Amino acid sequence: MPSTVVRKFYLLQATRSVGFIAPIFTLFLLRDLSFTVVGTLSALSAAIVVLGEVPTGYVGDRLGRRASIGLSIGLKAASLLGFVFVRSPLGYAALYVPWALGLTFASGSIDAWLYDTLSERLDAGEFTRIRGRGEAVTAWSSVVTAVGGGALYGVDPTWPFLASVGMNLLGLAALASLPKNRAYRDDGRGGRTAAETFGVLRRAVARPSLRSFALYVGLFFAVLSASTTYVQPIAESLLETAIPGGLPVGLSLGLLYAGFSGVTAVSSQRAGWLEDRVGPRRLLIAVPLATCGLLALPRLVLVAALPMFVAQRASRALLLPVVNARVTEAVDDAGRATAVSAVSMLTRLYKLPLAVGAGVLADALGETSAVAALGGVFLLVAAASTVTRPLRLLEEGEEPGGDPAT
Image 1 (cartoon, rainbow, N blue to C red):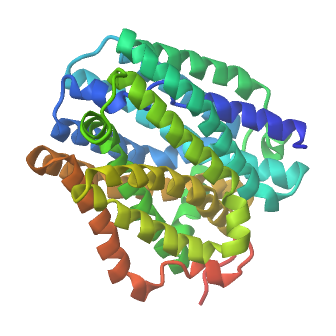
Image 2 (image 1 turned 30 degrees about the vertical axis):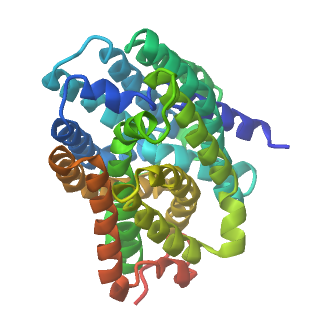
Image 3 (image 1 turned 30 degrees about the horizontal axis):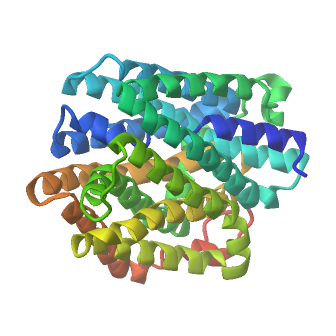
């Protein structure tokens, strides 16, 4: 039976679902935009995240993780509301700014809050299991909201965005019930100055094992993120050809995304169990290689998109808790939000050229070609980087916050 604080964390995670808009977001944009413009907007979002990750991670470390998460919820709600009214490329670009900043405010703070709370009240060794189950709660929430979002899209394309705004506002109520970490209860602020926070980042980047680990997993998550842009148009083609039916496109995609969310939920719930039995090293080798191999298959056989869709969702759900646990263990407590944010920053940095290049390729050769190319990029880079041993962080056995190996 989870403790009260863990149940409150799960409640917050339930409200973080974007299920209402996930099944229809790209189709919504493609009403007015080309793949190239959609890819450019995605790159813009990534650029904002790159610029904002460390400063917002500092906010989480210095001013409090709950305040940072609250800012994230508010910014995302404002962005979602704007999609109800905007139809121009410049308008969409303006809405991507608060959305991207909202992502940065949450990216390191949630993991840092959870890790410190478990250290203070329960057991930090439970981080991967509880974080994975938290992702599962978000996914199960998305099972319901994805179907609702698809149905709402068929009535009015803007209604899923209004429903998602309401979900974010519920998140503020859930956030208010979470306790502060000890460092922020004592004097209302964290103990690091800005210079000390950037020192955490500098030491992490200077540490070869953490740097190469972040580059490897960052590229994989960037490929996943860029490739999911094309799920909806590929799925629409699949529904129209290989799996014909009479349901509206929005509802069909909602049901499909509900299935994806179920896969994500199960994968997240089993992340800790699988890590214990297989080991993080094997997971971080096998899962990215298999997933990126599957990205090429729909280019040959369209129906192969179904296992590709499953792999995209399951791989991220399995690996994200494992990766974040390794990073949070590698630095001391006050700098955890900054360190996790730095890894997220690398992911977005990789995504900049990937998103734009894939958009251009999708307009020229089709979306399945773009997705196949993204998978090929990771496989080539992973093969070329084996000499740097990108997973040696898992071999070090250092204490959290330890000095770089000499």
